[in-house]
Image 1 (spheres, helix red, strand yellow):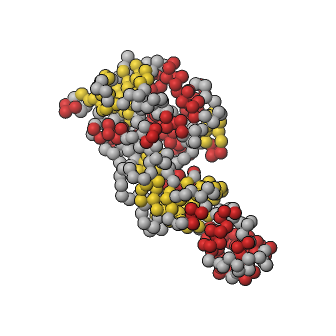
Image 2: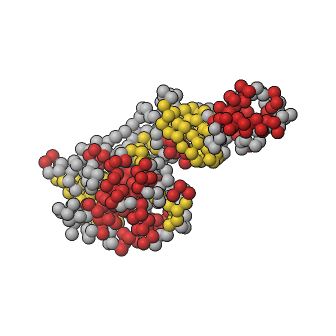
Image 3: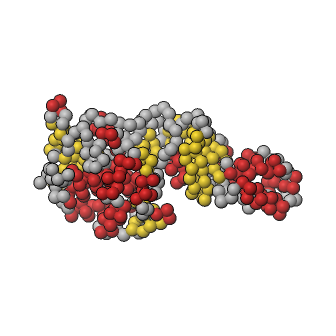
Length: 430
């Protein structure tokens, strides 16, 4: 019976431990926190969007980085397999808007509970409150094959295989402190630049603060990086905050933003390229001609009213003063006195409300970390390292990331399962 150690008790780690144990191995799952799934517990505001029910084309289309690397992992253990596993282990699921899959209970603890039951049933040894200091390799110059791990208290645990599932550095309060990056570097693996992703934006315009708490639904946004290069376009929901903008649309846009400067991003936020702009289309269902006709009708119905009092049918109440001021039209001007040029300019503002992106928020607010262990050093068919035999990597520690909607957890489940399955396979089987 082979001995497999899995480092990290998050989504990828728990799945890897289950998959290795199902192959009949003796598995030890090491977690430095007091409980398993600490980050998983707060995922999706505590509801846990476990995966996306879309087809394989949808899954791959929503991967932002190194999608081709995931072909083997996704086809080996896809979203249907994840859903079947959770329901088999006593966590019924439901599918909501956008094919997002959640526990019926809306409690992430039920997802964690399903894994805990599976781990117990399969005899996985779980070590909580246990920190790994480093990996032990045997061979010339300490390189070659995994031999075990050294714990922070000085103990060593022998292993035939080891799976690193330590996550990134987002939400550091949950224990994501970048240990896996250090393990990778110490064993000769390359790391790509890391930065916060699926994270809100800091915005320069002061009027943005006036809208704090306002949610806009059914709007579209465009993100443009210098020189006027559109890098993202999306439709959905966003939120104004005291620092700028957030919400699903903005988090997705952050995956595509041009980044300069720090590689670690350990300060409160990260600067972006000068001139990075976000444009909000407040009326995406109408083109400019249709919107102009709509304005004409509204103005005709309110022809004797002042401009500042004729916008109630167009925008949420909180947004009206901002749009009035940005329009350049005098607020006391009668709508029947507004010129065609003024009206057309106002249409352009509604279709392209501009915001200047000052930077990204920090890791404390980032859903995931973009960047990590280079996939060039990992075999995509097994998740095994090309640098050290018997060493595997899975989940967020790798240079893999996706948009919101359950896709990042699917990366964790798929890579974790493939790594655990291959680590637990008898020699020569794979």
